Image 1 (cartoon, protein in one colour):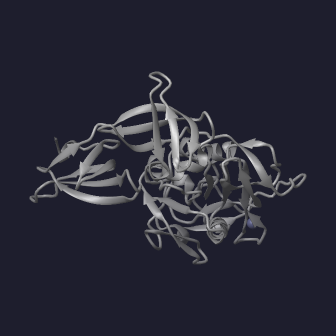
Image 2: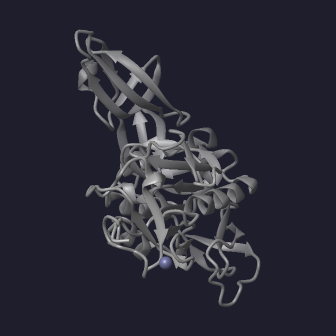
Image 3: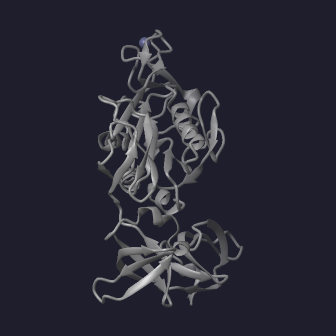
Length: 357
Ligand SMILES: [Zn+2]
């Protein structure tokens, strides 16, 4: 048993007879009140995330999981047989335990199986699962349009969206990265929402994230300036996207990418390597016209990039810069839209607007 104040991210605990992994734990000592630990925990059985408040004095049962690497051998009815390559011990797991990993089980794939008191409680797939396409429409020659995917059936029966140029017989890992970027008022969030809607219509499981810094409009929605909106999860860091990812999520949308730090690049790559389609929207330049990290790095690793243009508020030309209208040297001015204007290259003044007119 440990005291609640010792809870840390990544720990496993047994709580109300279920196993959980701690996603985040914050120790709070508000004024003269009793201290408490606000924790976000993920149920290992069903992947659901919940919030729980422990008192600082509460004792929590820590669960130590054994992680064993196993190789998938064969399927026999509902049972899947694995072998430990060091001890040659074999185990059989039901599809109930394997859950969403089943469609990724190609012969000889190695995965990590987490055991608790001799019982398998979770499995972890390798980052990349490469599979052969067995059925898809013919490849479209010269296809370069970013958001046009097509369904493809993989050797395990899994159906995923793949880029238009993929043919039958090719081996692919199913994920990829799309970036939608441009100035303010260029319709980035609308385009993100539009792509997410299409994925939802195709009955794909979608999760949308945005960083905590952006407080405008609704706190738990992504909202475009033209007031389209969609529920989203607010995260404090890019890492939290991985921690909050639910089982079976096929498409991840991320808004306001420029407000994350560089670790977003690694997170986005990890997701795509796992087979997730990742769509990131964000500003490509700051108020000085400088590349706004981590967007340049994302542009580099993305399979597909779309630049959206606004209309210059001065001359009506296509605009790709965000003119700041208030005096502030912070890179981020919260309160957003009212303090900016879309400008073209010629009408843009880096930094604060000079009032010479
Ligand atoms: Zn202009």
